[in-house]
Image (cartoon, rainbow, N blue to C red; front, side, top):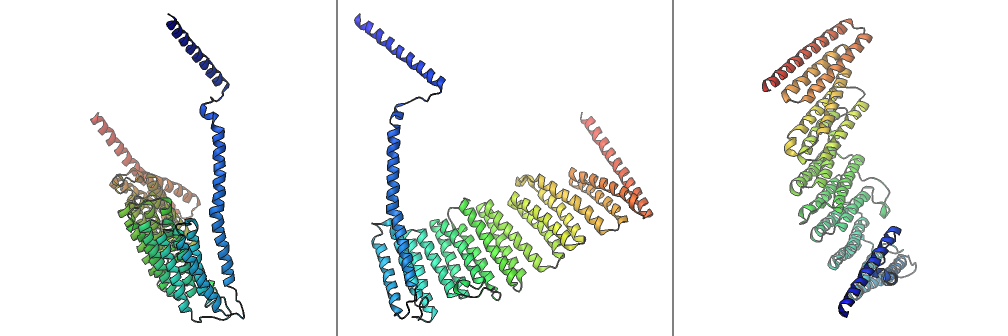
Length: 548
């Protein structure tokens, strides 16, 4: 009996506690107070503990890593300053010997302490090679008396040091050491100041970086090599002022243009030989830098040096870039690379056309080039190329109007190109899954404006109305043949434009005969058009009634 009473009492106590807890929870909710848990009780000590550990870790990182690297940098800077002083009245072999001994000692120390001090061994290794490099240069530079008068042995030594550093960086798996080796190799080429040596060095380093990009996916080193390669070539083109040459342009060596295209090819092929291909931001930046800097330098040199057959060089560049665009589209299904390489190829083709033909004839060829761009853009399924091409097409036509000062058959050609471009965009649009309705309308509107304007500028005022009526009739015929209502709208718009022109001509013109003929011909054409629309409307009504 007592046991059952105790059970009842215990249950009542539990229920009472739950009731109190529920009320407290409601009060906290009403007052918008955060509920405190057991974890909150220990939160402040844990946070303090973590903060203390973080401060201690930062202290050790500064003392262990930053001070070591800063110390090596300060020591290296001091040594380089000391070993580049002239020391007149002193045996110049001694600083060279000290430099080689110090550099070799640093390299051996880096190898020995690689496992024990991995965080600074790489810095020591790079410093050792830098000391060797400066020691080799001191045999020819930085001293009042040259230890070695001929630059060729010096170049051999600095190239050996540079490529030994590159191999060491690859073996150690360090992109930073390898990039430092690349920098020394570029510097060696500039110090040599031989054109073919500079070109071959850039090409060799481009091949090496492409290989490392393919095998080790060193994208950072790859992008660094792309930028540096074109900058070094640019320094050569302005006569390599780094070695004290007077600033001037190298205009007598057109073979350098072939080497620029060779750099582009090597850097691009790295992505075709890679097992893994993606369109990440670093990859997209590689494409952008390679196409913009590569062709930008190519264009700059051809403009400033004006080599013979410049148009042939740009045509070759266009073939290369468009070829890569096709390969990226067919082999990699890449939208980004296809866009960059295609647009660069189109730009090269435009420059080739401008250099080949006189003004204003090249405007006509540029307009027809737009058809090629639209055709390939549809095949590439690239809306970006289509939009960019339309903007360029409009700029070409406006440039023609501004620069030529007169309107000729070239402007008519631009209008025809606009019509054909709209037709191409409509070609197999369903199969290609390319939604270009707005761009087709833009091209048709462009043609609607360009063709009447061109005829107005080219023909005597009395013949303008007749030509516009002919254009309107052609639009209507196109609508029947192509079964496209947009051409009927263009026909109607052209008729209305003709009406406005005829009434303005009737008020302002003194040519009575043409005024009368314009009114008669336009009136007859409008009546005939009205009869055609009436017949079509009746046929449509009867067909609906029969189906109903």
